[in-house]
Length: 88
Image 1: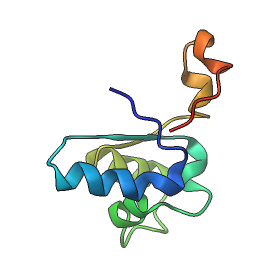
Image 2: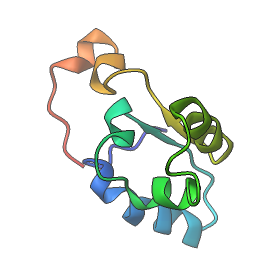
Image 3: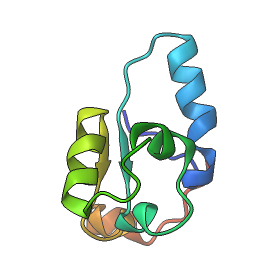
């Protein structure tokens, strides 16, 4: 099941909820998630590796079930869903 979080700023809320109930999860983000202010899960996963090359960061994140798309998430949706506005 894919859950729309309303943006990377809301990730901590969902991660905390999933962890509290031992629900397995993974995180999928746009590429800009690494160029703007990092969300809590990214900060924790990359602790001590903030200056690592992009390729290394992506490897570290993948091991923590955080996947960064090569572009925007919305453009990865099937066409029929790209025009809809989804609210959490």
